[in-house]
Length: 262
View 1 (cartoon, rainbow, N blue to C red):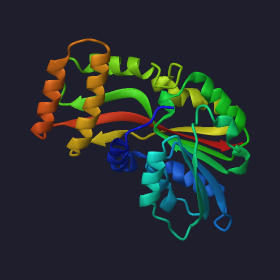
View 2 (view 1 turned 90 degrees about the horizontal axis):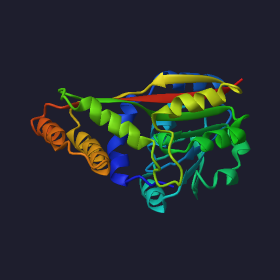
View 3 (view 1 turned 90 degrees about the vertical axis):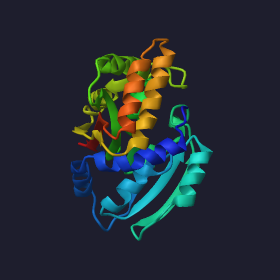
């Protein structure tokens, strides 16, 4: 499966934390008793941003299993792991959430969660995942890209770049099949609403002063431009100059998905 760069994962953790929708936490906390430990599996743990966000906000005791295909990311997370008195037990597993999905005992978990990777997955994964989780109490996938971003100030090529980016999001991301791209939230919502109460909530990035983050995202845009063999160097130059002048802002639309068993 596709692996994410640890530097990028840590850089975006602060931005992600500010973007997540708090209404989802309220709905999850209503579901469980404070005195009963809740078993949680985190898919694609990376450097631990999903756990770091959820850990203090979930009011109940928690048993966590962390999974990722990258041993490097798991080891990084282990070195920086900070527990609390609500965390009863933790376990780490190396898993490819694409090819090893049937090896995970989802029935053992009350909450199945992950963040910021649904858009790179192929369509058949979503149906397979639902098959294993049709009776799971809570399914939560946060920060799913939904196809819309913009930089400020505006440039005449902005819309073209977004279209190129979204087209690229639907290509194979090292998995072996085309990704669903920006449609990921709507797809998983339509599948799970047959067995769960489902919610789609806004979790947009609004990045104004974090210029290192903006540079990283521009780097991804430059790779898309290069892959399409087109010349929008004037757009990139304009964007980097805006960052250099500290006159740049990035707004990107994400969606948080929550499913609660009916």
